[in-house]
Length: 163
Image (cartoon, rainbow, N blue to C red; front, side):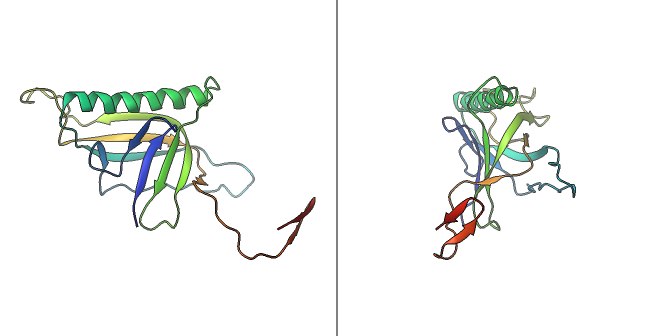
């Protein structure tokens, strides 16, 4: 099964499941909400997604960093009720049956200590460098596509009958 791991607002997308940008590292562990046991919603979740910057030119690095920055700004505006476009963190790992998405509240990228270090040779390209993409999102997700209900018989529900 294919892995889906991306941040998108529907226009700008940063794909973490390919090898042409910030690529997901093997030591990523998804974080799940722990329901508190009452009717309240658990606090937002912050996931630390380790990425490998597999970018070969300064221009591609700048474009990727601008995309991450644009999505972080959109998420901050949406969270503050200043913008109408939500940012979503789409996730479908090998063990998950379907893709889910989480409403993103904030995004930050932290490069490792070697990023742009004094020992860089030539242009300040980031190929082969590690960093952490921190994504704070709503604790509960939703499916990214509709799921067919089982059975074809009518079911009684409050307010009427559905098929």
